[in-house]
Image: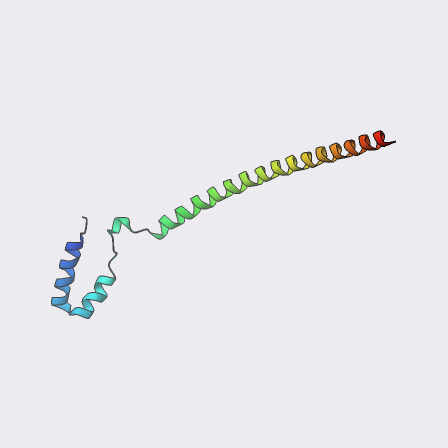
Length: 97
């Protein structure tokens, strides 16, 4: 059963008649703002936590692998740049002698 704002208002009005305004407000504040089927339970949150931790673990593994690839690429690039620089210096020295 879906509870509409109109039915919530009608319930509040009746509670005011029976219990009084303060008690009606207290009781209404204990009702969920949505239908009970839409309220998350601790079990729902536990399942979500397990799923999120699994996804975070996968992302961590992917990130670690990509960082390792980038590190290898950076080292290779630095070695190639160093070799090129040394070659250019050697060629310059050979031409100036």
